[in-house]
Amino acid sequence: VTFKKAPERVDLAWVDGNNVVINIGHPCYEKVHSNNTAKRLYYLFSIAIAVQRFMASGSDTQEFIFADKMMSAWGKV
Image (cartoon, rainbow, N blue to C red; front, side, top):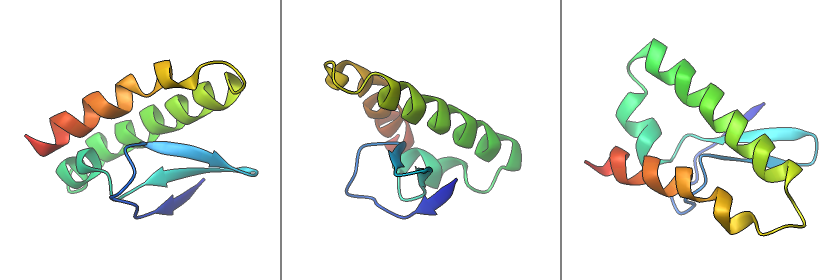
């Protein structure tokens, strides 16, 4: 697991080679970063989303972007 600040991406996380990259520039992360429990949940949820999208590659992965967009909207509130 690695971390990258990529506020221009809507993804909570993505798979890059052998790594899951967690987006610490996501609006949701910005909202929870000071709460350790919430931050751990963000990491777990992000990893799950990235792995699910990776396992579904080849099919329509746009259906897996919903959670990323939802969490982005929540982070901006």
